[in-house]
Image: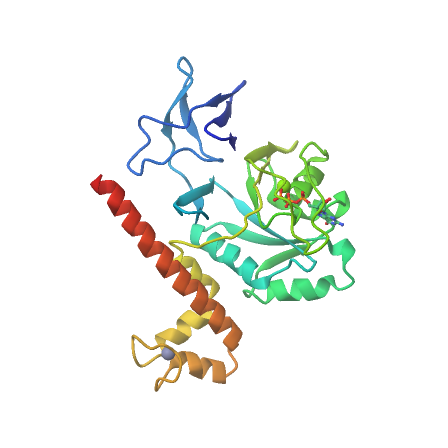
Length: 302
Ligand SMILES: Nc1nc2c(ncn2[C@@H]2O[C@H](COP(=O)(O)OP(=O)(O)OP(=O)(O)O)[C@@H](O)[C@H]2O)c(=O)[nH]1
Ligand SMILES: [Mg+2]
Ligand SMILES: [Zn+2]
């Protein structure tokens, strides 16, 4: 149900308590449980004995010195990628979350909040839709129950929706409005730059009266991608298809002869800005994935 410092909250048929996350038979990867996991628990010892196989797992490369892999959530049906219609909006940041969702294989819905404080919600909506053809985008005032009801179809009985996004975009506000309560703390954003104050500090599941679950998460400062080659290929499928057309397999897509990417740009299939974003994310993913692989093999040797 929730990950606290050093403890996890579990719930089952008529019980709810905190347990130690260290599991004896945790399986080959040695993972700890995370929010959304299904566990087998020994009623007598109140110890978890096994994590059931996950339908999916969101993870990122944690910020900080050790830069380990960090689990975000498991067994998610839909992810609400939340951003607000203000100066904090960033298309390329949304795109990172989108790559992660596609990699994990979870249906993404972009939720643009704070439609009530802009005169031009359609410009934010257009920027989001531009990221991938067919992307589902909903623009709402997160404090208006009537507006937020348009998100209810993803939150039905037995469904789990994870909310991801930067601090201050209104994730907890959405959870409160969808639940018709104000039990989760929210906090005004900074006036200067419109960023949040990292109000939510715990990843936690919240139950809806209709039997759905909302997984609120702390706003992320940066989403560093790792192991997302498939997600990148899906979000940038136009660039990936163009790369296939290059004459040289090691083409750098600058001024090489018969470069499929430059040809696609010349035909107006995508912009150089999109190519640059693809370059940046691909380089970052390659770097993070190799250094994590190195870390893992070092751990195995120990
Ligand atoms: N006007 C308006 N204010 C909103 C909307 N959504 C959220 N807010 C406000 O924005 C501020 C931040 O909202 P939170 O729900 O705390 O944001 P959060 O994404 O949970 O932030 P962290 O917990 O720090 O990650 C609060 O003051 C909310 O009342 C909206 O749609 N319209
Ligand atoms: Mg919050
Ligand atoms: Zn090329």
